[in-house]
Image (tube, rainbow, N blue to C red; front, side):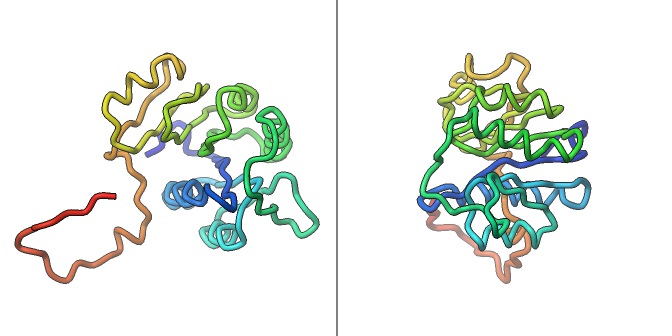
Length: 196
């Protein structure tokens, strides 16, 4: 999925709030699965549940919490509670000791071009995972994996002219367990399909 030139050290910025966002972490874990054997992968989170925190560690990635509490884990917030600028400052503080970051992957509804412009001084490339097409982004790569008619036109004026787009279901990030399912018997005729 990621272009070869950015497969070195990767930082993923995503959160899971009490009311929403765990899907962002799960989607990022799907991508991290393919990266963790090749690069160092760091997740930076402001809000995350204990079970997702543990899943990240079990995969072999590191977790950096902003801001850190006395237990070293992040608070599990109900919603995003700081400005993009404040989050960018704290994220920069977290990555400064990691050396140069080849790619920052961002999967977050609240972080837009305002945040990405500040971060861009500290990373080689920014890869945004988006499914709304309603915010401006300052990135070199953008993934929108949903099927949305005329989606490329919706991004016109929202992204850099040289941004490489990965649009549509052919770029969908399936979790590894879906590939591990063994089908015992193939159905001869498909009568009904449920798409959700």
